[in-house]
Amino acid sequence: MGLDPRSRLTVNRDQDLRSLPLTPQDFFLYSRVEALSAGSPPTLAEVIAASGQASEEANRSVLRLIELGAIKAAVSEPRRSNSDRAGTRNELRERARSRRREMLGAQLRGAKRGQLQRGPTETETETETETETGAAGFPTALDESGTREETTPFGTSVGTILDIVAPISATDPRLMAEHPISLDRQRRIFAISDRIRQIGHFELLGIEPVDDERSVRRAYHRISREFHPDTYYGRDLGILKPILDGLFRRARLSYTHLLDPVQRAVLVAPHRAKLEAKLDAERERREAEALERAQIEQAATDVIEGAAETERAAAAVQRAEALERARVKRLERDKARHRRVRERAVSVRREQASSQAARAREERDAGRFGAAATLFRLAYELDPTEAEYGEAWRETLAIARRKRAQTSASKAREYLRSGQVREAGRCLADAAEADPNVRNLADAAAVHAEFNPERAREFAIAALEGLQQADAQGLAADPKERSRLLMGCAKAFRAAGQVASATEQARRAHALAPSEQTRALLNRLKLA
Image 1 (tube, rainbow, N blue to C red):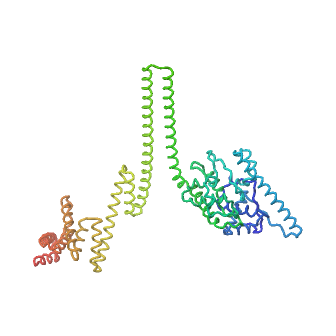
Image 2: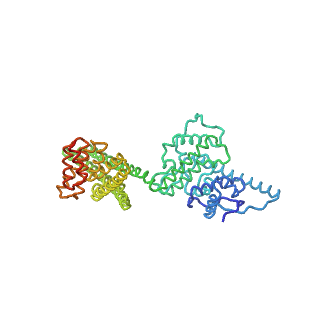
Image 3: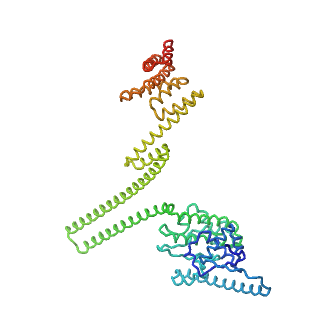
C-alpha cells in the first residue's frame, strides 16, 4: 500500500546511513528529501517530482527508507488559518536562522582546525558529526571548504579526490566568479574533468585496493554528494552542470565496478603483485643497509682497535661470506618467487583448460561436434599434459568432418537429381576435403570429369591410392561398389585425355561387375 502523496517527509538525523544497506536509488531519494527540507518538510509528491523517477519506483524507495528509519513520514495537516500560517512562517524563519548559525560555527571550527594543522580526535568526530557532515556522516550540501577524511578499517585515509587533485590555473577562462560554487572548487572540478580518462576507479573514490566493500560504499556516498548537481538544487550551475553529471555517472560506474568481485579482482591483482615486489625490494634494501652498517662498524672497529692484518683479513673473509650468503639467499628468494609465479600461471591455464573441456563435453553431448572439436583443441593448447583433451579433440574433429562430408554428399545427390552438375561437384569436393575416403574421392572425380578434367584427374589419383591402401590392409570392398568407384576414375582419366589409364580402370571395373555402363565406356575408349 503506497503513501498519501500529501504525506510530509523529514530526514531522521539520528540514523547513521553508513549502517544501512542503501542502494544508489535509495540514497538519491534521501538526498532529495534533505535538499527540499530547507523550508517546511516536502510532501511525497514534491519529492517524486524532484527526483524525476517513476512514481511506483520512487514510492518503493521511500517506503524502504521509512522502514529502515532513514526518513519519517507524517500526514499533511489540515488547512490552517492565516494567523497559524504566519506563526509557522516565523517558526521556519527562526529554524533557518538557527541552522545557518550552526553551519557557520561548523565552518569556523573547520577553519581553526586547518590553521592548527591537526585532525579531529575520535571524540570531536563523534560530537561534531551532526553539524559538519549531517546525520548520515556525509558532507553537508553547502559545505564548500572541503570534507574531512575518514579512516577505513585498514588505516587508509578515505577522503575525496577534490582534496588531492591539483587545481587548474586560476587564470583559466572557464572559471566563473559569480557562481554558486567557489572558485577553488571550480578549479578542482575542472581539473578532475580534464583528466578523468587517466583517473582509475580507486583513485576517483579516494580508496585503496585493499579497502573492504563497506569502505567502497562509504567512499561512493561521499563522492556522490560532491558531484551530484542536485547538491546545489535550484541554483544555476551553467557549464558545470553537465560536467558534474558526467563526474557523478563516472563515480557511480566506479562504485558498481568495484562492488563486482570479478572486476575488482582484475584491478587488485596487479596491486598485490606490485605490493609484494615493493615489500621484497624493501626487505632487500634493509638487508643491504644492515650489511653496509655491519661493514662500516667492522671497519671502524678495525681502525680503532688497530687489529692485526690477519684479523682484518679474517673480517674481510667474513664480510665476503656474508655478501655471498646474502647473494645466495636473494637468488633463492628470486627463484622461489619466479616458481610461484609460474605455478600460478600453470594453475590458471589448467583451470581455463578444464572450463573449455567442460563446455566441449556439453557441445559434444548436444551433437555439435564442430564446436566441441574447437573447444577441445583450445583446452589441449592450454594444457598439453592432459592427453584426454588431445584424444577427444581428434575424435570429435573426425566425427565433425564425417558429418560434414555426409551432409555435402547428400546435397550433391540432390543437385545431381536436379541437373546442377557444378553445384554437385562443389559439394562433392567439400565432402572429399572433409572426409577423403575412396568413395567421396571417386564420386568427386566422376562429377568433375564433366566440367573440370584436371581437378577430376587429381581426385581419381587420390581415390586409386586409397584403394591400394585398403587392399594392403585387407579391406576389400564390395565388387559392385569397387566397380562403380573404378568407373568414376576411368571417366576422370578419359576427360583428362589419359586414354590408357582410363581403359585400364574400365577393364578392371568390367571384370569385377560387367554391365552395360562398363561395356559402353570400353567401346567409347576403343574409338578414342
